[in-house]
Image 1 (tube, rainbow, N blue to C red):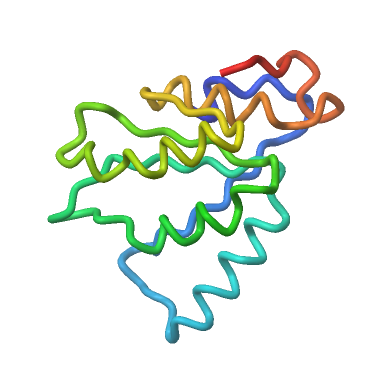
Image 2 (tube, rainbow, N blue to C red):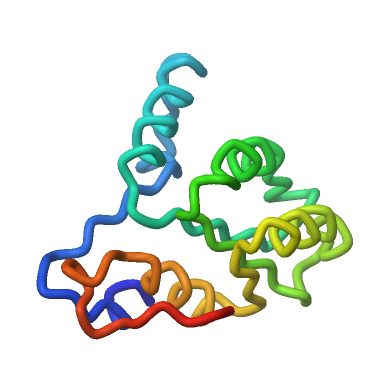
Length: 130
């Protein structure tokens, strides 16, 4: 969806904290340091949280969201039909309280994140109020 919606003149770079081919970092410090540097360098940080306490609890995501909340680079996506939507209520409330865009579909979450990219990199997308 990022590729489909990207209208910028420059190539889009996406940094994902997910492991490649099931390979995990050798130490937590390695993973935390990489993720912290990647989020600091990002123009937009997309949090898509299809909360499932059995397979994808997203506990570290809660911490990262809190750390990045005040950066003006964050978009929160929480599908209401995920297995445990009640576990996203706190994040949704905090996001709205701090003016962070909150979306319920992945398509809208991607669009909101791309709207955060500065105009010189993404001249066709204007920031909208989400």
